[in-house]
Image (cartoon, rainbow, N blue to C red; front, side, top):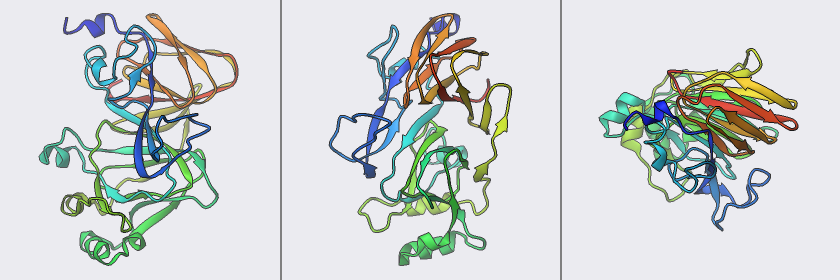
Length: 306
């Protein structure tokens, strides 16, 4: 039975988002979500999180974590939409080697695709030239950490790569689609005096002075736009005016509608594609057809090895 997923993979299925409460979040996530089911501030909608509930197909009602045996193991990508109403903490993530040395499964390399941006919106990404761990430690102690970070202005449609070891912070005035390794290991360096735990020793130990973080230029492909292609993930954007498009087999992936509705059809079954929700394409899904009754824009987030 161990390889049953490869001989008969489940049809594509849709997940219900899981809302993560954060002090920097929002109480109203419209137009993305009518309701979050909580009165607390929500900072993140996890679209492929372990606690997400399967909404369509024969496994409806199961948690996504409970599906791992059906899809050939843990889903390698955690896809979220971030809703900051306030600045996020300044943080850094370890790479795989550093994370495993600290007893974690894997590191956390991520990317952000800008869905909404107020005029003048920016993210903090990397350290200014000449700044290293000693300056970071001193700035945390005297409350001047923000002065050491490079500011990157962002607008809708920008894709930003954040590799492990990059000191970073997200500001308010944006909504971001984040694709990352399935990991929640975050070292918080600085939190503007909010009373949350910091992880200074571990965080400062994994800082990389030079990283590959920054904006990524989109690449037009045959029928879609490649937003980013990195070691841990590839993210593509499709814009369908209406009608059907065929997408060749990709291996493990998920689709997230940014606007519009559609139907995802495979040889094994079909499911609806809705804004702000992930449709999982398990390994072995094969070619799919997307049927859009009207304009549909969606992203495809793929794991490596496809």
